[in-house]
Length: 417
Ligand code: ATP
Ligand code: MG
Image 1 (tube, rainbow, N blue to C red):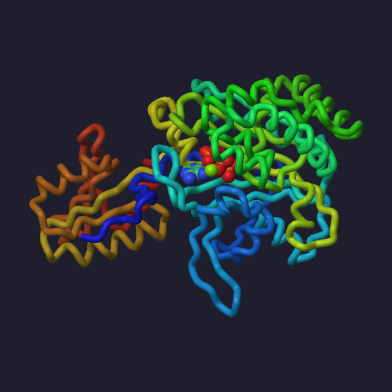
Image 2 (image 1 turned 120 degrees about the vertical axis):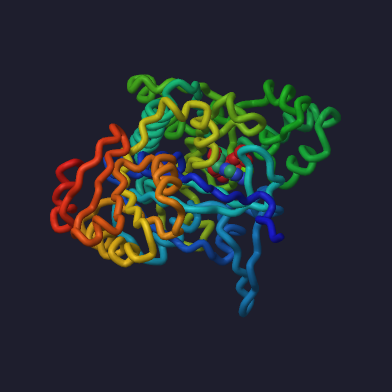
């Protein structure tokens, strides 16, 4: 037997998955975002430059597919870099470019509940606008969406502000001094981060380090005047819109391209990994990709599987789209099968959801099977009906039966729907 690849899964019932994605698409269209699709295969260089060499994703989670003519191709681990690549590659002029995409991403992580090697995201970007009002609108939209879809499930919004590039450069010195003062208590990983990618220390999972970082200097308190104003506007306007948030000075997010606003939506019901959505502003990403254009942007992504985990305990309280009534045609013998296929063809053309039983079981067991499937009507085709050009229509809900002429069948069933 061949089994599926570790960290991947077969989704045998897509109802909940589709409910989440369909509702997200509906919401995004209402907020005037358009959908795009970018390739699953991308050059690895895209992520090395954008996410940064020291990030977990690039340093250990990439799925490399092949190397051709000095170009290494990988499976995409996130969607923002490719969306920005597409914006630059197609010289898009929209100001802003409001787009979203849905699809699978790949990270070679240690699989556990809510953490897979292939997973799906809805990724949302507002590209080419520096207005902090877009950060506010994006966060508010997500808060409303999660509030609506998760209803009973509590979640919280964690928010931080990382300032601009220059702010972070000067903050690194301040942070360095603090880390030196406690370096004999830091874990070995943090000592490496301190040298290679200092802001990443805040990502440390070690409890001792985290307790020490509660006293660390906070970047949001060390930003330039114009960033300080934006940080203030962000907080004030979110409060005005009744979006509650927790200021979390240790939130830096796992990727190197973030500037200014960063946020995560978190839930206690997800086990070890608590975030189900993350995002922020990434004003410097185009430069990291080699462009000389200024393309300030803000975006977010949420994991479909993590939302599914949150919703699974409440399945019976969700409203799924109504399934069309199922009609099952039951030919009694081989002889009626041809006629059954002809009738089914006519019914499909009339948009009636129809299945034909062709396994040659007894009528009794076919009726039992139709019942189990939740069929609304069973259409019985025996030798008598065959000769008389009729069908016996059995209402599976009240058990009544009616004989209908084959020529009138579609019209009769349509009147019942
Ligand atoms: P985490 O802290 O859990 O590793 P992350 O910061 O790596 O998350 P992002 O890159 O911000 O996650 O991706 C956004 C969202 O995508 C996450 O909030 C989560 O819902 C989902 N996600 C990320 N990695 C995985 C994974 N390996 N399996 C399932 N969902 C994931
Ligand atoms: Mg991660």
